[in-house]
Figure (cartoon, rainbow, N blue to C red):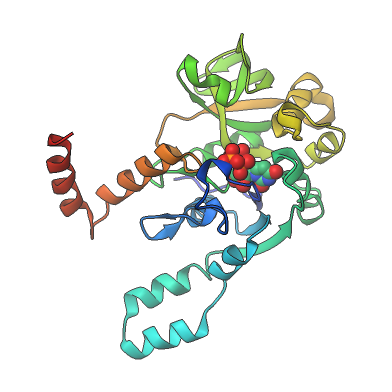
Length: 297
Ligand code: UTP
């Protein structure tokens, strides 16, 4: 896997949404803290950023932020107990989450949309380009899109979004890309439409990975509420695509690997199973059980 060439060092991880699709589980716990097998969703996202050479991470938090901060903090008593027991494996797992990266936090206040959450990162990010990884969107560690997006950004200076082909019946749930030209799986976009109700410009859906120029903050500052009354990152990117002189144009990288929207209950269950069947400690027993289970349904 190619690591980032080094232009982009910071990543912003929005995790301040209300998670209403997962209520009541998300009443007191951010959806980003729900576990996929034995690690919270957001840890997979952070590990992906680190694999791409991004070490300075800013998590945008909302209500119930304590669980998030605590997870990435050290817990001396727990470490001491595991150490006394000689339980090296669990001790490693507990320490690992507190040593992954340099993690910072800022609050969004009211969840006024993804664009608004990203704008909260302005002073931390400064003048350099940065990545955005949605805290509930998991890309399987065996697949990669972020390294490729970083490479496209570093080569062109344009903003880059990750795109996935979805069935036409599903595109209204996503931001949809309007494609100007294609070269392999890299596309130049002439626009983006957030959750199109009809006449979607394509069935290429924006998924939760972005590499953005710092000038996008200026555009976000001037982006008013859009769909659902929220400040939409898609609307700011649509503006950038129309006025590339302001913050660079917009390109897309088409991803066809394994990706899970864990804020969606069915996708969350699929992600759990997909990850668990390949785990050394669980896989063979789970596969056998699943085969047996499937016979009865
Ligand atoms: P979603 O649209 O999936 O989040 O945002 P949501 O609003 O919490 O979802 P539902 O529909 O109510 O279940 C994608 C990502 O952006 C973050 C979310 O936490 C999630 O990681 N987000 C969204 C924010 O940080 N702030 C917001 O205002 C909105």
